[in-house]
Image 1: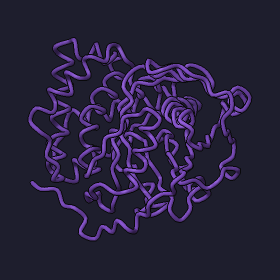
Image 2: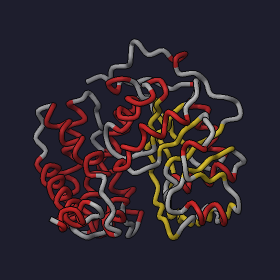
Image 3: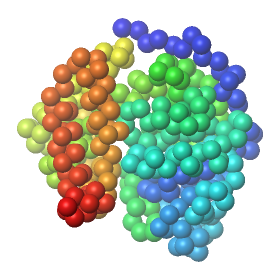
Image 4: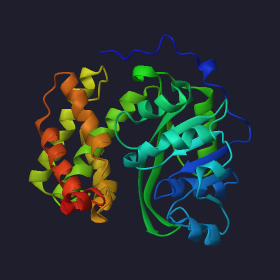
Length: 338
């Protein structure tokens, strides 16, 4: 099955960015805080939106621990209110998808004529949601393969990796190829020491990441396990492989072919990561709302729409919905109150 490229794709509609680009970071957490700090360290103009950490970061800046070099930024452009931020060339959405209801208020304040919104979120359909606010021509997807954690206010620890895959978004996730502004964003991140891979097809890249995200993010929560645990045990490894194969089948239904050896290669690569907690496991351990719909619900609905049976994903989705409702912040309090 062949991937359809957008025959109506007009690269000129996706205007090139300014030569001296500015960045807005929406979501200064383990992901946004790390990448934003690296960009500022490289001399790029960066503006950070914060909530609970605002007072601390405004006074003390950001501190990054990393095997690539530990550093402190004593002063950063910190904001509590998006209305106080300047319009920027690149708006990085690094919020959890559970906070995407805030984007309709945030994004219009920050975009200008040639801005691009770079969505660094997990799951399926996240770019489509952002495009509904700012228009398809302003949206680019970014898929991060990194191991990061928040240690304390303004303090982030980078453990492994850090590569980002960039791809343009178009309506119905038609493939767009490589654009000039992708190369411009790549230049900025590589100047900051972040490895960037460019992809011609965002949907293919999304399915490839979901092949790993779904089993590992989900099973580490429901089985209270690390990635190393899941890989090491013969039974859980078999379950992981079944879930991965389900996603390969769904991707094929959407004309995205995954190589036969992709699963084996990813498992070998992931096995080197050690006892790492996934982002969903970290959220659950802190009783924060889980990204159930973006990572699990949307792929499940895509499978159902294509007529593909995914029993393992369906079970995992229902288990996570239960845990999210009865154990995680806000929703759990509301349920228990009744």
